[in-house]
Image 1 (cartoon, rainbow, N blue to C red):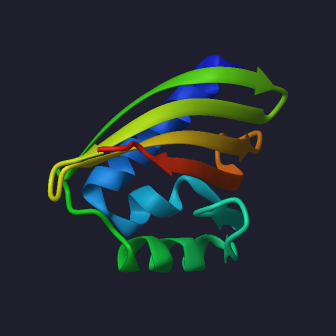
Image 2: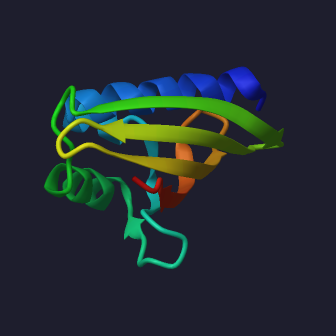
Amino acid sequence: MDKSSFERWVDRYVTAWNSNDPEDIGGLFTEDAEYFTEPYADAWRGREDIVRQWIANKDEPGETEFSYEIIAVQGNLGFLRGKTDYKTPPRAYENLWEITLDSDGRATRYVEWWMKVPD
C-alpha cells in the first residue's frame, strides 16, 4: 500500500459519510472488519454490523466538513490527521485515524482517535 491507496479509501469514506448509502459504507470494509469509534470502545464487528451501526449513528448529509492529510503509511497500515467541523450545533473535532487495508483496498480494521476542539 502507498499513500494514494489510503487517500482513495478516505475519499470513499467521505462519500459514504455524506451519502449514508449502505453499499458505499459496506464497500469500505472486509466481511470481518473491526470498526472502533474510539480506541477502547467495543468494536463494531463485521461488515453487516458496521453498516447497521453507521446508519444508526449517522450524520446527515452536508452536516460536516472534513479535511485530512495522510501522515504515515507502513505496509498496509496508514494514519491520517483530520479535522471535522459540524454545522449544527457548531463544533469541531481533531482526529487521528488508524486504518489497515487488505490487498483489495478495503479496511480490515479502523480505529478513530478523536478530541473535541475547545470552543
